[in-house]
Image (tube, rainbow, N blue to C red):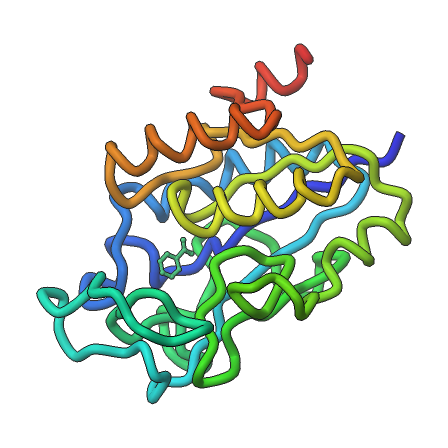
Length: 208
Ligand code: VGL
């Protein structure tokens, strides 16, 4: 049975290494757990945020962030983050070079798009990134998901994969870190309600 490991946005922008972007506590520490999880898989996928600095949803300070935006493909404002060519775009320590992954998805490249999930470029989920189709073409039956952040891009990616009805979806919390405890808790409730298996560790994933 083919298993895919998906490393969702494991980028320095979501770690304390980039305090002016979107630092997630301990976000820089999950590399080894992502590697352990990938050792259980046949194929490994990397997703990366790749945002222009002048995107429509960019605000210039953290106190202006998380305001609702009346835009079809960007629901909230964020400070600039994960801009290609900057430190924040780079992957976190311990991960392999991009070229060693079997597939890479870059998302949020257009200045008026800010998707969370790795399966669609738009919030309406009409424009596929090709991730689901790629996994299908590889005959993947199970996906192991980890990365940053649990409460946004990990959650949305896992929900999109689950909604496709094509895969058993497992989220490994040891290979994830989240922005805020309350939204992480809510994310876990939502993912479990959707039928996703939410595990605490790679050991627990092995025992399934
Ligand atoms: C993310 C907030 C804004 C994520 C991306 O990768 O979880 N969160 N942009």
